[in-house]
Every structure is written in structure tokens, then in C-alpha cells.
Image (cartoon, rainbow, N blue to C red; front, side):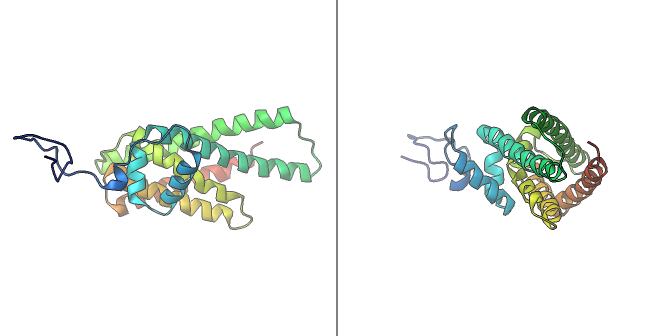
Length: 205
């Protein structure tokens, strides 16, 4: 016989493990190479899909794809800055571009991890959040696809900044198990602080 709750086969007796997870959250692990799947998962996170946030937080492969999407965002922003230098007549050689991009990755990575870590610490300290930092990183890095919007002229930084705060809010709400307004307050305060920091550091070459 098969248990109607957990779906396991059993004989005369059965110790049920509890309520089975929703179908969309109990999907089998994806193959290691599935770029389209994780790209779509990232887009779903930006649309506040609770199930996708919970699913990717437990998906070890999601971390690698999140890093790739984040690195592409840094590359787009760095490329725009380089293009502006070229427009002013300053030469840019490939080796200089590569070293500059590596430096941008290092700085951006430090700031991104610091932002996520501070939010995690605040939530654990003030609201007794239950998530782990690794479980947060997986959907958060996938959600960094919103940084691609920064390259849109005029409105890009505002759209990307607001979308980034929204991603922080939904991920911390679902993974840490806190109230939405608690997640929003933490994400907004820390997000604004880091936006100001990025603005201050922007003129540095």
C-alpha cells in the first residue's frame, strides 16, 4: 500500500514522515548543465515566486549559476564604464580590461557578500531568523540578475536598486521565516546604505 500523505510504500505498519512538500518544491535535482532552467528561475525570483525561492535555497547547483549571473551583471556595468572612457578618447587595451574586470569582481563581490551578511546578522539578531547563509546565497545570487537593469540609460540604477531591495525582501522572508515588513525594513535600510556607499566609491578609478 502507498501512504496518501508522504507517498511511501508500506506494509501493515507505517511511520509517516509528515506532509509531503508541494510538487513544485519537490522536483528532482536538475542536471549540472541547465543554464536556461536557472535563468528562468532567476526571473521567477524577481517576480516574487515564493516556491522558487524556497526550492533554489536547497539546490546546490543554483549557487554556481547565481555566481555566473552576478558576474555577468558586473561585466555589463564594467563594460559600460569602459565604453564611456573610449568615447572620451582614452585607449583601453585587452589586458587592462581584464585586470580592471577582475578588480571590479573583487570589489563588487566583497560589497555583495557584506550586504547579504549584514542583513543575515540583523535578521538573526533582531527577528530570530532561521535560515543559513548558504541557503540565502543561492536565491540571492540568482536574483542578482536585476543588476543587469543598471545599464538601462537614466532609469536603470533606480529600477535595479528597487528590484534588488525587493529580491532581498522576498528571499529573507521565505528562507529566514520572518514577516514581510521585517524583511522589507532590513533590506531597505541595508540596501540604501550600500547604495550610498557605491555612489561614494563610484568616482574612484
